[in-house]
Length: 216
Image (cartoon, rainbow, N blue to C red; front, top):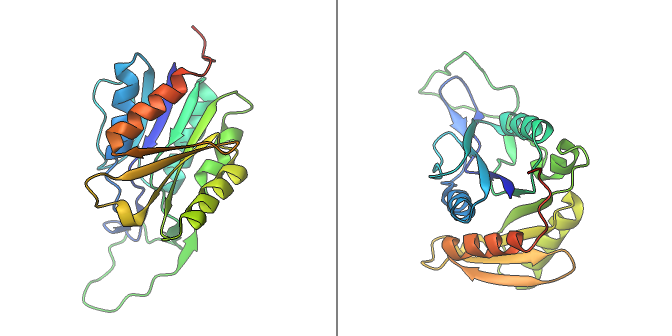
């Protein structure tokens, strides 16, 4: 089985030395990569600059900002066929409007930044794949105490992006010893996992039950 996994955070530049990012470490994506490789899959990890690198996998590629991840995904999916894409990267929702590349902003004074929304990369993955049949798994981090609202957020993303599965977790459990993940399947099924290692094995088991589509 041939699998492409994205993991870690994007960095949106402010100037030549500053950027906007998020708290993602990439540990969950790396754990998924390693679990897949341990079961014999050929895994490519696309990861952020300082994100955790998975051990024992076929290939690593590094991205920086939203645009570089989108370009990298497009190139990888055009050049090769994959059985599955697991899009676990924490992509920034905003970028600086007109970042000052090649310039360092002076310190010591107030600074106002204008932010623009970024496109949802998961919405483009199937078009990047050019009609290839693949299993698409996305991630949705929610920030809502209502379980019904969490489910709606996951199912809305699944419908919009064409994903086969969405892994949903909530900000409230990020610091828990047993981080809770819920896998939502197209058609309504759900699986609950506690901890990133359990999630990784659940996704491996799920993918192993699907027919392989990549060439021998």
